[in-house]
Image (tube, rainbow, N blue to C red; front, side):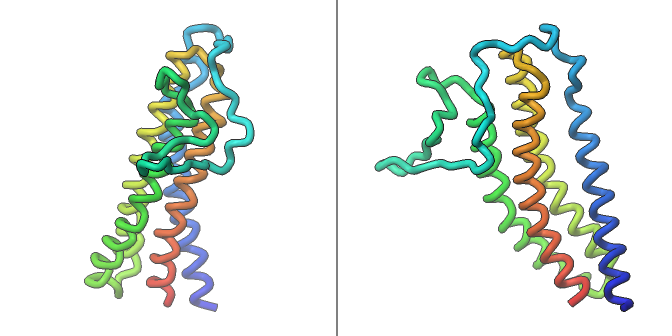
Length: 178
């Protein structure tokens, strides 16, 4: 019973701190920041059917998007930004888990210190995610696309961030409760 209460309190603390972080990230660009009245540029791409980021390696081992995330003239797209930052997040997570485990050895008996360490590691993932959403916002302004399109793509990146952050939190929860 006591373990479940502690687990619930820790989960609530993490959810609140994550929510605060997301709120601060979303303030980077608001719909009022668009200077074209919200019109859609015909060159914008549709984010439909991109819930799963798929990439393939060519014969030389170079990564290429299967959906044409970048046009023939190598123009940046929402998909190419999503692909780039999804890879960055997924590559950073195991390293951050390793760092967490190493640093947690010295503080394993202090649950608040473990929670703080967990938040520090997740914050590093958040920095990567924010950088990606900032690039998406810049693209929105450059192309003159609607805020809703940016928001949809930024949401996809946020989902990846949340999924990767959850992996770190799982390690923390196992250590804190286990």
